[in-house]
Amino acid sequence: MVLNYIWVAFFLLAFVIAVVKLIFWGDMEVFPAMMDSTFSSSKTAFEISLGLTGVLALWLGVMKVGEKGGVVNFLARLLAPVFSKLFPDIPKGHPVTGSIFMNIAANMLGLDNAATPLGLKAMEQMQELNPKKDTAWNPMIMFLVLNTSGLTLIPVSIMVYRVQMGAQQPTDIFMPILLATFFSTLVGIIVTSLFQRINLLNRTMLLTLGGACAAVAGIIWGFSQMDSETMNKVSTTVANILLMTIIVSFIAAGVRKKVNVYDAFIEGAKDGFNTAIRIIPYLVAILVGIGVFRASGAMDMLIGGMRWCVELTGANAQWVDAMPTALMKPLSGSGARGMMVDAMTTYGADSFVGRLSCVFQGSTDTTFYILAVYFGSVGIAKTRHAVACGLIADLAGVIAAIAICYLFFG
Image (cartoon, rainbow, N blue to C red; front, side, top):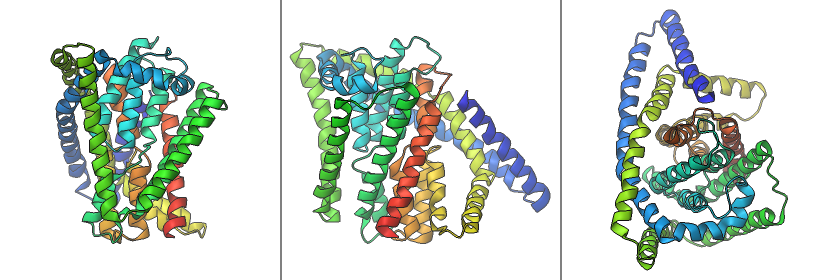
């Protein structure tokens, strides 16, 4: 229902702004631009779905092999103490726990192409347990908030963009991103737990969060000892090694269990193809709405209004110029990436705005895209508090990014 209101608001606001621009400013290009955006966004949505087909087939096939080989069940038992606290409604030892873990691990490594099919697999498994098939279940919402909070340990793609834009130290945003995304995820967990009345003040969760903080500190220290070139090589190599290790481990487990690995892979791959087809209408809807909103000039007006309000208070409004990336990130990953590159082009890769845009890009994920794809894949219509929790986590990431960037670069 919330997505419905937001989607309608995109079109109504865009239309009103376009009419005002046409009547009062004589802007004859605004309506053609909006119509062009509907066609281009529809094409983009289809191309994304088409591009996901092969990746979905691959990873859902691999997951099926792992599931039949017992790997997923092993992960579920291993992670049961932690996930039983965050996902109390999921039966202990259920295979979905392993799928959730694999998705979160892929997201942390920045492996977007691997994370999406793993996440869709987890959603399908949770839907089987969901008592109300058209309504978001509590574990689904917690899972999506963990995804939308964008916890990333190795923001390889952002550092690559900074290299291309001529940054003197492309990796100088590594620690700020790590800190900002950690705060985003932590706030997302806390807020969702409050909505769902999950008690986090227990020994298991306190030890887990404490261990996570220690691990983050260790990773930051380890990478801080490397130069930028070494860091990029090590992070990329580690990510690819881990990804290939997962594939080989699943296949080896299937062989050990005397599973027909090939047939199991084909069975899972067929599910991947069907899932890619199902998400096309949802992607078209959300991307067309965003495209019209951008083409009408509503985003530019929003940023101008924010700058004016901040300057009225006498505060430093330098961070406002980076806000297009932050505002676009929950809506569109590619749109936010374009905003980030534009900010580095306009202000410089090593400018405060350029760096802050990069931290915005890495601190959260595409909330509405994830909701549309994941809920759409299993036919969820009533999202309950999923949007609110996801956006609060995004807001925490934005605030943390601004504060941390002033600490590091201000």
